[in-house]
Amino acid sequence: MSVELRHAILGLLAQRPMSGYDLGRVFQGSVAHFWHADLSQIYRTLRRLADDGAIDTQTIPQDGKPDRKVHSLTEAGTTALREWLASPLETEQVKDPFLARLFFVESLGRDAALRLLDERAAQTEAVLATLSAIDIPGDSLRSTLYAATRANGVHHARAELEWIQHVRQQLDDTKE
Amino acid sequence: MSVELRHAILGLLAQRPMSGYDLGRVFQGSVAHFWHADLSQIYRTLRRLADDGAIDTQTIPQDGKPDRKVHSLTEAGTTALREWLASPLETEQVKDPFLARLFFVESLGRDAALRLLDERAAQTEAVLATLSAIDIPGDSLRSTLYAATRANGVHHARAELEWIQHVRQQLDDTKE
DNA sequence: CGCATATATATGCGTCGTCCACTATTGGTC
DNA sequence: GACCAATAGTGGACGACGCATATATATGCG
Image 1: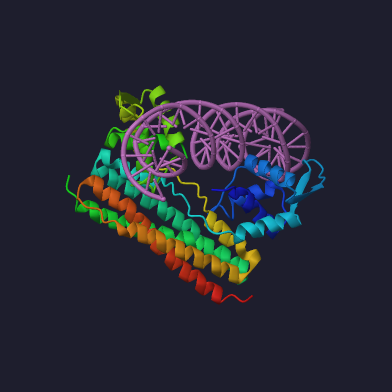
Image 2 (image 1 turned 90 degrees about the horizontal axis):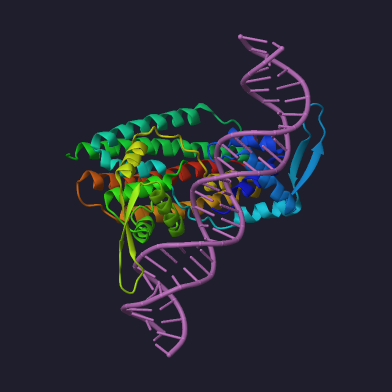
């Protein structure tokens, strides 16, 4: 729930100072499998972080392009990040559009449910391929944890495929 | 993304006509493992569905309590539901606060990461216990699909626990 | 030459969603 | 008797978010 983008930005800036545009590329790239954010939202959040004194901004003039504003954590920002990291885990409120659809597809009958599962299986295979493609080098703590976030997706994708097989069997036993 | 609460409400009303308050209890209860919604949001969405002519409202006077407004699908509502169910699956944009935390907890060191995993494991065990507790009776298509939505949570909870074990081992091999 | 794309930041609009408060009554607990 | 929860619905405030658009320039493609 509570203002996660703020924390994600603090976390990224703790790793290295960056501009809003840089953050946008990171959210589109390396961390896209666990977080994403719109550029306009990033800039708005950066402004609020600056207002709260959590980040320092250094303006680097460039010719041709607009000024680069490189943001880095202040002491207050570092403290805020640590507080978030140390706070107890909230139980996440689930919203799973696919499961909702599977549940409600009942009104279209068994075959529609099976087709939906096929579609989901294909989608999951694609995700699995994407996540497996990259092998993360290095044995630093950071790269180990980064690899872990990707491995999480792999484990869940496999679980999803196994579950789909399970449901297919259940549906085969269901008359109608 | 796109206006899922509308569709979830259409789906529930297709199963049986209900009041907004009833919907609230369903979102807090039987479907809470894949969707939830605030009462005020439910009432607002019902109003918009009524404006769009997707639902019919029958007011049933009660003594003592406010009138019950029982909503049911119109033909237009049924069509809208079917269209949603038949539309192609969108690839869901992931936002996983836990994975974000795990990635950024790097700045607190290896022990903090291990503690976070412990917390997650406990949380996941609790979810697993809740989901496993209920055995769904019946072999109708609806109850099979409902059981499937719960089984999904079980499969993923187990995958999460396996993944945690995997990450613990990786961290043991990581110096620092 | 025009058009698309990348770099870089920012504003505005509208929706969605959460929290809180309020109305009104019945029934149960301390 | 006072307080709280459940039933049933309504309304406001506010934040988070996504999409479109604006600005300004450089490079590359056909």
